[in-house]
Each structure stands twice: as structure tokens, then as C-alpha cells.
Length: 93
Image (cartoon, rainbow, N blue to C red):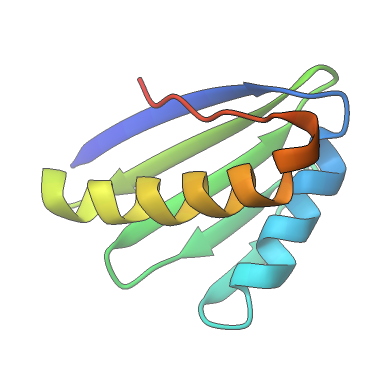
């Protein structure tokens, strides 16, 4: 299982997590988690969004590196577009 994580600095993490889950939930399964986060199930893998006080933590996992790249691309690209005004940038580790 390939995994990666991104920490995105923002004071609106809960709002961005909800917006991302709502938007992507139109095409894939989005589950709200008890901690206020979201689990997104892609055909290629899974993404978990966890809002914290000063950042949004995004975890991506998939069976292989290629599938992981798909999950990372979709999550990162959409979040950066939603947060363009606040200059959000996603860097996967």
C-alpha cells in the first residue's frame, strides 16, 4: 500500500474539507467521520481529510504508486483551486 500526507496551512480547514468532500462526493463516495473529517473513496484509492486548528491534513493511500498519484492529483488540484484566493498550496510527502 502506497501512502502520502500533505499539511496545508489554513485557518479555514473545516470549511475546505467540507467543500472538497461535498464537491468530490458528487462523483465518488464521501463519508463524514466522527472527528469532523471526511473519507473519500476513489476507484484508485482513498483520501482522508482531517481539519485541525491551523491546517488541513490530507492523507492519500492506494495499492500502487500510479494510483496514489491519481488520488494526490485530484485532492491537491481541487483544494488549490478552491483555495486560490488564499494561495493554498499542497505538497505531498
